[in-house]
Image (cartoon, rainbow, N blue to C red):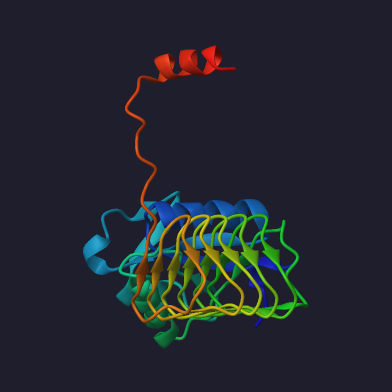
Length: 234
């Protein structure tokens, strides 16, 4: 599958949605690729204005007429809502309408030639991806993740910033991985598992598993007093 975001020729991009995710995607495409956002498409009940960021917005049932699939590449940047199922639904909807998809890979990454990447992926800055890894379709990988050798990331997964996948890890479909979680060698994270921030996963998970780490509790002391106490003991 071509990495359309790294093509030298300019393409027109049709983005699903007009929220924060759509605006983030627009900025990355325009600042870090040769492509231009042609417009936006939304469900009709969310058609609140005819334009967003100076580009036209149309209801999804008018998309083909306004943005023919032969003229644009689609991109669905929605986040992890409903365990990534919302993003998957809109991806499948546009696919059923005949659209092909852009994949965005930030220029700081060198992935071509040793990593398989699917369509409609959004891969941000400074990834460390070893040889023979594979990333499925409709995957979001936020900044600064480590994907170990021969690891596999299933369709519709979402990796927050600084996730670590050691070698031979398998991430199932619709999985959510929180920031700074660490998945040990050869572990299989099952479909729709929710792995919270800072979690350490050393064994296979079951489907729809939830693994979370408790938040660091407040120390119960005023910060200025705490700093004074530190100075006394330094």
